[in-house]
Length: 144
Image (cartoon, rainbow, N blue to C red; front, side, top):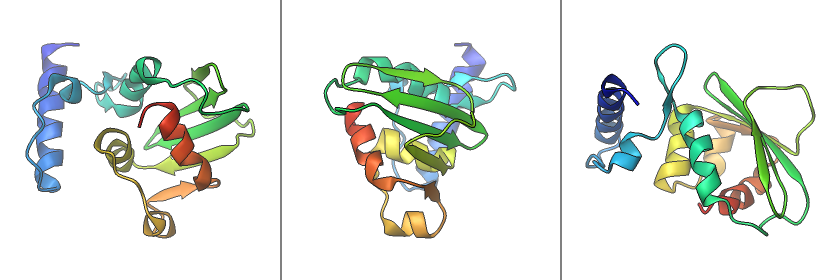
């Protein structure tokens, strides 16, 4: 990760925390959550995908389940079973068990800050999901 990327991550973290009236989290793991995409912007989804391997919990799912997450302009399909998971970085036309679309800000709050969406998040359109009852189990499968 380049010095410019780290500075950009610090700036984004600071602004995010200011907006939500929190003190900045100066932990370097938090500041370096994402990866630099082709445009040079921070890709939260890439950072989360990198973290998934170390946090995967076996046995949460007994049957194979597939999830498609669209976070801003980025998309990933995650397939999880009892023993493993796999990630594909694209938005394919294949059917999935759970389709979820939200903003990078909302996804970051859920993944990093422990926020659990309520009914109003779904009704307001902040999160679009065709099977929201699978989402808590997905988070548990990755230690969240």
